[in-house]
Image (cartoon, rainbow, N blue to C red; front, top):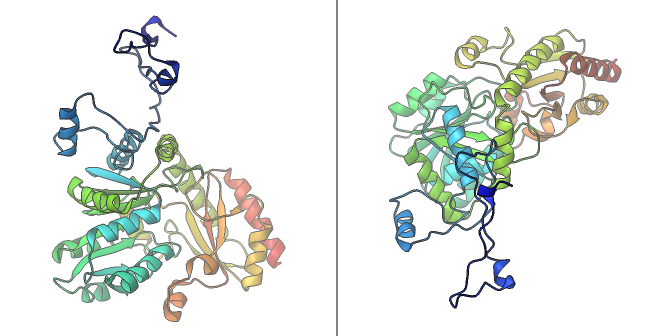
Length: 408
């Protein structure tokens, strides 16, 4: 320890004596770094409470006349640093972090809508998003219309001028990997004064920033963290919109842990390296799957035969880490293939360094009617892969042995 960083001696009591050790252990001295001496990694601020030396400073903070921190549930330095870094990556003005990706979606919808409002969403949406909107309808009186992200005519027809307030979609969709026409959807929202909300989790923080989206949502559990050890969500947009959502969530008591923020900030340092490798591996494996017997309907936006490949090329820098395909078999065969994989782990989520696998029918087909389930291809022979950063030849060999060994 340098002489500049030694703790100060115990402060005297009012009568000139030293503080009792029972008091001193509570009011311990804070160690500050010497001038021009900086930590390479930002500290994790776990303190729930922050104080000011003068009431005038606290009053200015409460009135919004100065920056600072008061209570961890409202704002935390570690969380705030992450929020601003995420906003810079997505190309937005501000950000707000939540306890999970789904919390980011629910806080956004609850913060921007009220009873009697109408929203439009896509049946190719994330299953929990469909479930959440179903709950909003049944319990909070928020009306909705569900359409296909590919059906432009039906999307515009669903808009009720003056009543429809918001449209939410994702691209690529989970797990069908449909590609939304970003220019059409954002222009439509501007035309009818709708708030545009894009769940950008699959595409990542560096994609779709060229479009006029009001609110970007991310599950930070995926690509931002990348190591399967932290959970969080983010809402990114202009400061006014973000604060509207933030303060609505504040009243509901949502909170994001500074420890999770620190873990995700650490993961974010290798975000571009990991995303590029995952996407590179995914394209290679998608092409490989098309060569295997007993495999059909390989879906990946980077494949030339994907129905919206050209649109994906226009909108995305890379094509993501998720692949969906079908096998020639039934549910029992699907499970046999999955159980035979050695490197691919049967686990939810995506965007991690490890490669993961799930059956699509079990995990993704809820809250759809029979026609939508059939149109989405979420049948019992469907498999979703989330590709990691392992050696691509090892992953190919694992898929080859599992499929050939299980299906003959």
